Image 1 (tube, chains in turn purple, red):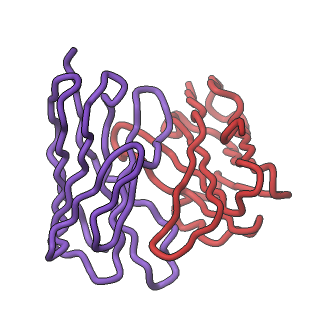
Image 2 (cartoon, chains in turn green, yellow; image 1 turned 45 degrees about the vertical axis):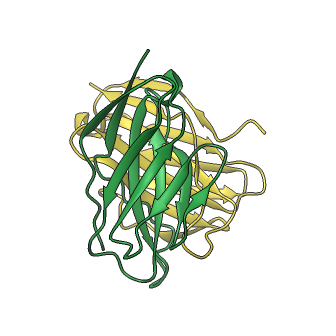
Length: 113
Length: 116
């Protein structure tokens, strides 16, 4: 399976935008890019996913590089509640295993007041 | 909707005892997942059910672990006998369907298991 690489940690200030990077240089054409986050003492929470085009929803935006070898999760205005571990996950839409979320270590985002 | 419900939230037991974790998925969801999270290994998928049928149990660590889904609104994960290395947070998740490119999984609050 293709792997993702994320920074171990990042810091941001409240009400400023945050750009969380993810590298996936071995991504295949059938891999979807998913982002989840895990707040302290809670279960993971779905954030957003995409294939080729940039995606927006109420929580965040996902910017996908033209060659798809990297992507960036964008939180437009960070709040203290956004402090969490953010996971970038590839899901392969072939071989019948498109249900499998393989969590890496993720990026620990700290938001300063 | 109440979301995915797990019980108990905390469980402390002695080595050798049987442990049963329970999960109620979101109504209408037809896929259910059990995960385990530890500091050493992170989040791991243990087993996946679709329409109450186990599809992939390759993540179940050993025969001491078993999972059932007798109906669409209830699942159990049982450990018998339990060992200290089973101490972890166990999450249950459900999704409406697993479509193209995966689907949004909704996680419960988890059960923190401590085996002494």
